[in-house]
Length: 335
Ligand code: TRP
Image: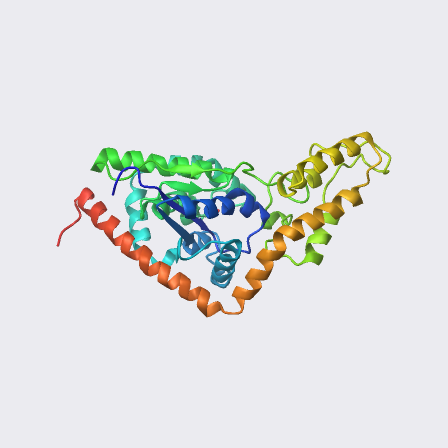
């Protein structure tokens, strides 16, 4: 494969519906890259989903369709992006096993993303081995198709860094096989949660979903964290750290009006309800078309599964080519 060929790949763990944080952090770049890259892949990372849900396979299984629907509804186009299911490409598992020899246990334990997630889940030393090594499995997710452009949120940067260490080690031991991987970050790499927590996440219960109905959006925005010191309408309010303004900055196209509102808010005389109502409208305008397209697609789950099945066939073809190259490089090509 030529050196400068652009191969985009991303994935989602099928552990829940996707939210605005996913859109801002990664989906918008997926949509861009499917037009700009030479080849584009999207993976439903069910094996990764199982690394912390081994006891709940129904959850993973059930969400395969959900994350596929979310991505299709946002505009991922199966004609441009090969959409597939991780576990149906066993070559990825094979590549993972070979990559595991290139990393130490100490290094796995140092990955800041994994450390954070372990803390959040309260694993301590009793972390499932599969979970601890998921960055290596993710390196295989990316490298089975020689992916080099990876749209991810900021939290995934240490995972990409570790994947690049695998690339370096592999190439130095077995000869130049893989290219350096580039993470593709969006302008807003991390969306704050509705409660003001630094990250929107399902487990923190502070997310607005791409499939939320208007009533749900309204409820969440009405409860949004603003400025706790802004009690009366006439009080001067703080814009910084005020989630409503953070979201308006990202989702409201009328930048001048937003900046005018900020001035008024800081001076005093602008109530939270006014800016919240505006945000509800802005978010509804953004989410409604996604939600509607999603509902339409959801009427025919068989068709969506068919897209994944066809994409998987395509992904496997590519995976087999890479594996034969890898086997040769490692000298395990016997017959
Ligand atoms: N770890 C990613 C997440 O939690 C999901 C993922 C799995 C992924 N495999 C990938 C992302 C490969 C990019 C490339 O969001």
